[in-house]
Length: 239
Image (tube, rainbow, N blue to C red; front, side):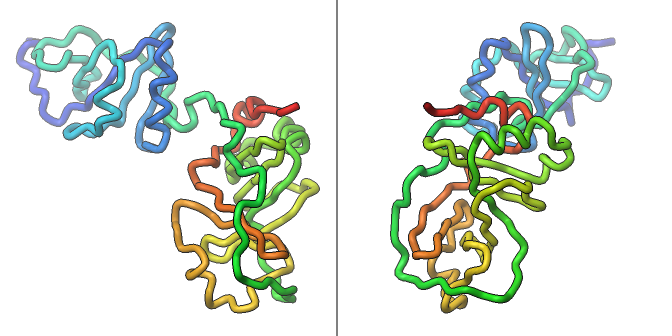
């Protein structure tokens, strides 16, 4: 009877050796992917049923299956199942991958000067970003509730500075910023002419961090990772 299984509507599943975990790093931005560990194996699901992106096609998969509604695994191109998908703990790929932040994730130096003026403002704005010392962030990460951390993302610089984004921000010493579009402005300050904000920076894939003197640095969104306790612990500390 197994040979008569219809594979229409089945899901594509990949199995990789656990030693190939690093090969999944290029897929971190595919939030629909799910990963599970099974001893010496990794299982990946949530892939498109057709037209796989090149990065997915190039994965060093040990086996590729179609999974039917009953949990049976059919090797691609075959009509007979060779096993059943184990009961596994599936995690979104960005959360399941160990985080190794490059030391240059966040620029350590001011890179550009914007021809703008900032001035004090009495209008309150909720904080959106905090720049603080890595050691303070690590201490906070050890004791903060996971529900609190889940609201935050962070990037680390080569001089042990951390830029944290999200709300509510942690109560740590540092420089707080609020968000106007893709600009991050110092708390208590605003553009002299707020209407020009979109003209200064309209790239949805990055933020422009400004200080009170108008110095700025661009921070790509890809620099930030979810504030999981394991990711905070793995953040490198430069001597």
